[in-house]
Length: 564
Image (cartoon, rainbow, N blue to C red; front, side):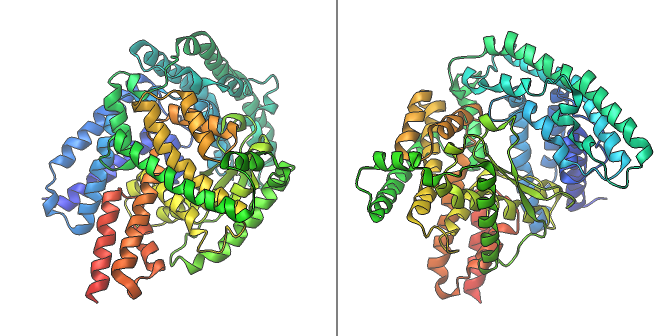
């Protein structure tokens, strides 16, 4: 008879295999290439099948006695059941019915699909062609779910759809060779025989012409004729069906803590006041004569703080990242093997995108991680924010943590999944590590760091304000303008992101506060026995765990050190 441990690990294997088959994109990202020729099923029926299957896994795991598992399996059990519960609740709230927004969506994701694929063989190209030919059906399914949302009250705020039409239109091309989807066919590796290349090129042009472009035309027509006219003026998640419960779920899901909107809001206000005082002190240290508002206006308008060309911005970023790389061993025992690179955010997505973001590498190590930098509207990309931004998005932030997580000896659901509060909390904590790594020596750069921290504190205020406390969008924008040095374009894009993605923005500051709290406790209780590199190992070498689990892990580590 199977032991509880064997039953549990068999269930984990079945769950993972189901998820890979259910979402071939995710399979590709994790290095499972069995389904590289397939598109996901984005239909309503598929969502209900997914919900039914996850509910079955939930029933089965509940029948496994947790107390009969060993320590490692108990930790896996606790994390798995929490993640499973969240996935089920997300499906019950039908969050998949919001697949398009100005900050992200299927319309901008699909052209980027090629960056997750290694084009090394003829089969790689044929798999990609199969996906191109499947985009038309896939988009029909996406439209079906969006239409179902309109019919049943899952209606998007209109403001989150601004500029989506332009991004869609950019993929409706007359010449298939000009399509972003065609790029892999502009050059071939030596392993692809000359005799098949012309056929692949023609097949790609046909796929763009008969599948990709019609798919985007259908999405554009639906957006213009149904989705935009049917969207709502209001912005709060609490105004959706069962909206108050939905936002409560979003808070718990993204923070991994049982917090109320009011408590988060008050934490944010307290952090804003603390950081504002530090920012005022930095302003005083520069010798600037004027108040906070005039200093921020000076930063937003003085040309010395902005790159003149996209190339200059990327070069500055690249030089900075190599300097940061050289400091990592002082603070970390364990570093990932996978490298990372720097890329521009694609032109078709840049106007509605954030200042930067990180894209993890492939789980099989064949594709590096990439730090994407927005070079659109350079007057909105101040150089004094570059250090904080790069520490967050690349190393020791997202790349270090996520690439290392993928290389750990953990179950797949922990190698490739986890909690936003940990992932984003770590990246914000990483920004502050720059002080210990010798960065932020320039007062303007240090002000940029504080402005980024203020930005995350403001998120606690404005996200809860808009979704639970009746704030208007303009009220949120004004609050961010008054308390950060970010440009108005960045702030507008960010506020609209919070509207489109309720609760996600809370993860950053809540996670960072918990990690800093745990470090402070460890420093105080361990005294001379405290080792920062060992602390970072404890935090990072179990993957992105819930904050309550992280606290238990750090406490156990401290007890072991004190018992020596």
